[in-house]
Length: 477
Image (cartoon, rainbow, N blue to C red):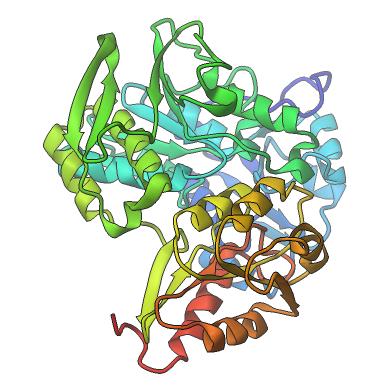
């Protein structure tokens, strides 16, 4: 056990390697509705650890996750966390979704038990040579998957995981020594690395905008969490791939100790080429023939960031170019669902912030029926309102944020201004009935889904179901 006098909420590194977990008593705090903790649980169990699992959620919501971990633990508690669950425990692994202000965490940290995170375990145990981390407010999942695709197309083994979904721990035992690890890391996870946790020497930060005030408490705290990636513990210089504007831009960070900085940009003097910065102040020009999922300014920025990272990890020009042309995108990220009677339907349910919705709207021309709304995080809608005022947009809100949306867009000279609806189905019914040939129906909520859905995936799937009920589905283009 670690010292009970340690500072509050400081996450630690493991005090043993994976081959020494036999008989270790571990409490996994937070299973997750979507099975985020199931891979961790299977891995720890395979190493002989004795597991206790506690989740404060609803049993029905957790059913799928519970089915996935049958016979993996000594005890499972569903409901309020109890102090008795800490008795005899050596480690507590805390799910990143549990907020820092959760009352039970105070008891965990004051108990003297070693408190770790799944990401901390992985970073402490994984090979270091080809490890890269990706974070940022928006676009990090796309950059991770596109980077992986570029490496695979170059004949280089690569895997993407972390916050992207799926535990990477299970791959540690038999991994190819040449395997490139591309790890998506959220601000929640970064906030819990702890001062002694190893950091990847190659990092990429896609962008930074206001988000997660409800979890971090302030914008400064959110930004500090992102900066945790830029603390290189290795004696050799690391590589940081950063945007050229914003909080991590040239004006904010001119240089970092122990990092070589490569700047990524979506701007282009020639729209037919990507100019990729390389180490030693060289550049590489790659023809830019993007797939449909990488169209628009956001797609170009993601492609440039991924290409810069992939090149640093050894990808070839041919592999980068091939992946850009063939990349099919990720579900619910500006995903083209159907064109029905010459009306285009796009699922951008992953847009959970005003900035991400603004980006989606900026990629469209012509009349757009914009489906927006969800659970408020108190983020400003000012820039989003400015974007809407310059376009031909019908604003159809749904869910608990209708009052915020109405206040923000009531004076916007755009179509019929704001109309509020109880739920997505009601808003979709109006949008699909009014949309004319050449119009677009866009689900890009700008809010998290948790007022009416368990996840943005569930919200996006509901949108797809609604589209599927329309005549001539799936495609008449």
